[in-house]
Image: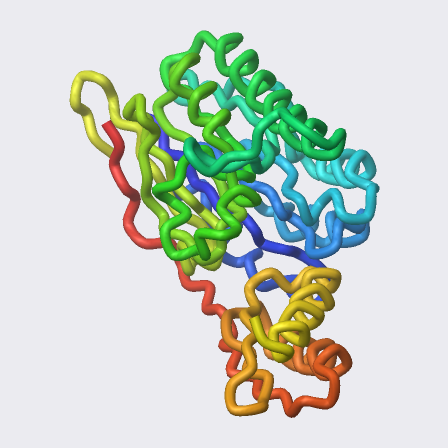
Length: 243
Length: 79
């Protein structure tokens, strides 16, 4: 079995330095890997990422992240990735990474994702160039997630995104903004490629638990939803061995 | 939509630009009421300042709570 700790939307900056460090320093006692589901910074500034990197300095398990929309606000996302990488955080965007734990392998495929909405209330590739670009961005993200998942050959796989792949974890958010919170294209990619768990953030007023139409567990780990430093999900052995 | 909703829109935009994603704004009885969560007391005060500047003279009532960050609950097992 593999234990996955996850949190999203920590919106880090200097004014919250130290708020997570004591608990993150102990994450290895409960988990084998730590996933960060985007919105790592408040305003997308590299100096905010430096504060987060310092906050993560005591973490003794692999840290894997995707960026969120906040992290792109200042158009300095490449600098943020570099700062986090220097701190030992692997930031994924259309890529996958493998983690080996006690003879088991975990694959994590990550992409920020994008909105577009959900069947019956989604944006379409029609009309203004801006609308076509919106949908194209969502499709490109989903395609990259699917390719990253399909490239994995591990015992267990996790899809890590910032935007939600399903409506279920958006319950509690105003219906009008769902197209800006997630995309069914992400769920379609996850179901097509297969995964054991999908983790996302972004939906602060949503709910934690959902599922794709194909039966993949989806967990919204936005910190405002989980109300804790992180959550731990144990992917149990296929022979029934539990955590 | 009412004229008060213009204020709500402008306040929401100002807060978004400050990276404050967890704040709800609505006009109740002529006052701008803010609800939701922030990470620290300082951010709660910052929200009041930002909202007041965008509220078009409305009184601002800040009912934001500071989000607790306790240790995680027991792990959830997923087969």
